[in-house]
Length: 291
Ligand SMILES: [Zn+2]
Image (cartoon, rainbow, N blue to C red; front, top):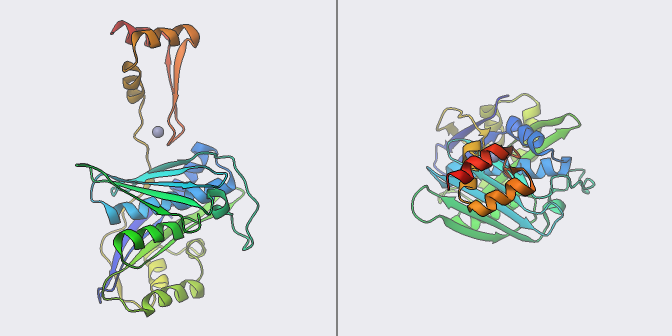
C-alpha cells in the first residue's frame, strides 16, 4: 500500500480523525539513517505522529516534535508539513534494546520514561508557537496524546505503530482521533474496544486493508465520512548542496583557508536525512576568493 493520509469526521460532529499509512517513508528513514530495530520503531512512531499532527495543527509552515527523554536513544526529532512531507532523526541510531514484557520493541525504554516533548508550530509567518509537556511514557503515542490534551483541552486518542521484520519495515501508520465538545464518555471506550476487537493498526494494514477500511474498523459504530481524498505523505528533506555552500560563504576568509590547509575540503552531513555534502579544495578557494 502506498503511503497516504486521510481526514474524516463523524456525521454527528462528535469526532474528527486523521489517519495515515507511513510504511515507505519509515523504511526510507531506516535506510538513510541505518537505524537499529529499536530506533526504527521509535523514529517510525515519531515520523507517523508528525505526519498526523501537521495537518491538525497548521495550514502552512511546519510542525516540529522533539522527544528529549532520559533513555539511551537520545533526542528523537521530527518535522512535518501539512503538505505531507516529513523528516527526522534520532541522536543514537544504533541503540538496540531487548523486547519489553509485552514482546514489543522497547520504545519507551529507548526514548526514556522521563523527559519532555517539545512541540513547535511554525505557521510560516510570525513567531513560532512553542510548547512543552512532560513525557507520559516515552512510547510516543501517549506522549503526543498528553500534548494534545494539555494544549487543546480536548480529549484525543493517538495510535502510532511500526511493525518490523528482519527485512525492514513491514507496516507503519496510525491515527489521531480528536473528541469534539459534543462527545460522550463512551466515545473513547468504544474506540478502544474496537482496537482490541479488530487488532492493532499495523495488524489491520498487514491484512491488506486500505485507509477507509481501517478507519471504518477502528471507528466502528460511528458514522464517519472522509473529508478529503487520500493525500500522499513522504519522507522529504529540504537540504541541498547549494544550502551547504551558502553556509560556507558565511565563514570568514581565514576559516576557509584553514579548512583548505587542514582538511583540504569541507564536509557537511545533514542531520535530518544523513546526506553527505562535500566541497573540494578548488570550491573552497573559489568561495574564499569571493571574500
Ligand atoms: Zn537533509
